[in-house]
Length: 622
Image (cartoon, rainbow, N blue to C red; front, side, top):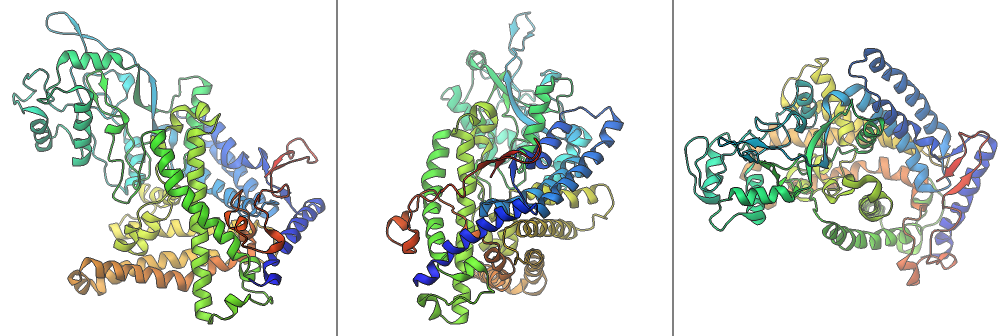
């Protein structure tokens, strides 16, 4: 690497830091402050939803006042708030824009207090009934998915109301989600079930359940359920005795259940419920969980005995999203198999990219290229930069999301505060399987493989317009096109806001939205070509050839359009962000000689206390 080029990163880090604090002193910019700038995205919607308004129409109408304040407050953030940390500077615009999108989702597009419910845990209340002989026994065994059956109390939940069902449809594209039936006909001590049949053992009951409406579950879920029953106490012949069931039920101290909005509970209980839904972007643990994730519902029950969380499956979806059920498995998989490889990759990118002026200043620069890049043809240089940008972005996101999951599960006091919400069951993988890209092309890239953090908020506007009749439903393809248009437009808004809030003045914030618009167009184009033009040819091809074609289309399309986004990353100075605390490659002697500090978290990028002119604009500058 040429020394004069490698030093560009050092020079511009110092220049941008000085510029930011000069802008703050002049009153043009404000640092991103905690707690002030979390007001719109977090605090206000949480407080509003913590106040019951189902039976107070005037209070429900007050959501427009909350929304108006958030929109004005967050647009001011986009225009006037930034950070001395280059990653946070870009994130400031993202947070502000997402705050607007998320408040629209929770206050307009959906009705959480009517429709939303979450899986929660509570101390178990023993339920008893009298049998025909007058003796007190446990309730007859039934399989439940958290909704009340004839043998349960109202407190355990009820079948979804029309509003709850409509809320679930938001994530299922208006396809009804199958629910468990009230009973499964599981026999006790060889007794006959309700229909007079005696399916012998586990396999017989499984087959019987699949040929009736007694267990309206997928095959994988049913197998998981009965495997859990066997592991929990079934005899070798697959029959569970009443005594064994009673023993298992008596040993259970807690139970899982659907918690709808607790309007009659204390303020702190309502605040906890509201905080959870405002903080959970993918709706994990809720009836609104995005459909690519493993299912979320309370485990089924056998009488008063509730099966463990592992019975709610599968733990890996067809899109490749996985869910660990123990902290040990979560730590091993996320830390050793995901975080460590991506830590090494992002460290390499941080060292290698800063030798190229393109990643420091963007494409509009007059700096000479280092020798190893100057010898490349324009096409190879373009491909090299695009591939490096993609690797850097993907590895940084993997590192961020998985570090966040481990922090929620292990870093005190988060597990103690969040309790059940910090269980690995609520922390599925951030991305899906790359086979989705090979099998579905761009639709699989954006709809399944790429992280789906904002999917619920992206899909909500289109679902609302269709549900309320403002847009005619039409065909499934029309619905998909409307949802895709909303998703890509919203994503463009988020990234344009991130570009605008960064420190440099030469960003072109209006270009990233075109990248996402073209992504939506490319997704629609590929689907149309595969369905209407080349379908007859594609169906005759072997699987490997179809996958190769999908991969080639994605690769070419991304190369043709990604410059709209990645060029602006360079202009924003985002690659000057220090992604790792300890640099392995600098410890090995790589990088500029003036900047081979192994410890990368210096004081000029760490959070600091900022004193504003008033008490409300004083806080922790991140």
